[in-house]
Amino acid sequence: MIEAQPTPDEVDRLAALDRYHILDTEAEKDYDDLAQLASYICGTPIALISLVDEHRQWFKAKVGLIAQETSRDIAFCAHALHEEEVMIVPDALEDPRFETNPLVLGDPKIRFYAGAPLRTPDGYTLGTVCAIDRQPRSLSSDQKRALRILARQAVSLMELRIQVAERRRAEEALRAKANDLERTVAELNRSNRDLDEFAYIASHDLREPLRGINNYARFLEEDYKDILDVDGRDKLATLRNLTARMEGLISSLLFYSRAGRADMAMDETDLNLVLDTALDTLRITLEERGVKVIRHGPLPTLVCDPARIGEIFTNLIRNGIKYNRAETPTLEIGVVEGSRPACFFVKDNGIGIRERHHESIFGVFKRLHGRKKYGGGSGIGLAICRKLVERHHGKIWVDSQPGAGTTFYFTLEEAIADD
Ligand code: ADP
Image (cartoon, rainbow, N blue to C red; front, side):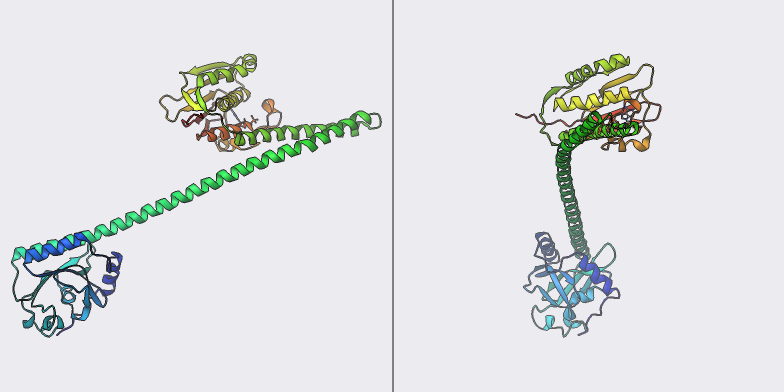
């Protein structure tokens, strides 16, 4: 008997075999069917799909044989690995490689062997589809061709296995990423709620001592005005101004935290009416500044919190008038045609905003101008707008150039009405 040598690319070949993760897996009908076909086509009682591992050959499918594997040193298939074409052994007893092989002399008493190589797309031979008989014989060229086709089919099945495994891995990775994202969003929501809670408590509790300071400053002003010199009186006035400003900031913070905390009152809402109310609230300012308001198309009816959406419109309209030096401030308000989810806009012909501020203006207390310029403000309005829009699962953003006016856009996701 002559033992087969390892293939010249043995290390890489074994690595290739490993990639299929097929050794020692359960029997599968698709492979069993191929072995059965090999047996029918070649007319042999035994047919196998054999994979040659480092020290053994292992059968993914078998017909007419009980053993699940045999040692590599006696495997016919180990020889077939070296062949380009179907390896045929017409009579093992006549072949010096196999004449004393225990599989020939003992069970299963092999006399005839035909093995078509299982060649991977990257050129490694992993084993064979083989047909075995207990008597000497030969194969017709059609039978050989059929055996080669079966071998190609077996490799296709194995390739499919890799693709399925890869897809499963990709799906799992995607699922893991989605879970991560969900967790991050949940954490973010929690920390936002914590922040709102903190802002609420802090601003609520700070108000009291601040009022005390303000009162005491006033008492000092009133009771000691004859004793204090001008400098002393000025300092007290500054103290009162500072406390008033702080009071303003704290109120804004309180307002902001409420936007995140208070329950939403979702209802089916005609947004035209919401806009009417917002414009009504600002009527005096609009008239004083001679603002021209152009409304585009009817607004939709959506399930949302009307008071909150009213606040958003009011804030955006007020800003469109405030940050505007045009002779006739003009506001265009409407919904982007065909947008889904509905995308609303408030466009002005005001001073505009540099691109680098387009994101930061939505931050708490963020103002781009001096405290008293453009009628002042606390810089909380857009932060509140963003919070309210986000509570409607929408987005808010700005499109603007200095000197070319500003358009604020916001979307609202269709919600389900409260009962
Ligand atoms: P506030 O108006 O109280 O300062 P906002 O949060 O409403 O606070 O706005 C933040 C900043 O964004 C404003 O200070 C202003 O600089 C800029 N801004 C907002 N709206 C407009 C607008 N329509 N045109 C130009 N600048 C704007």
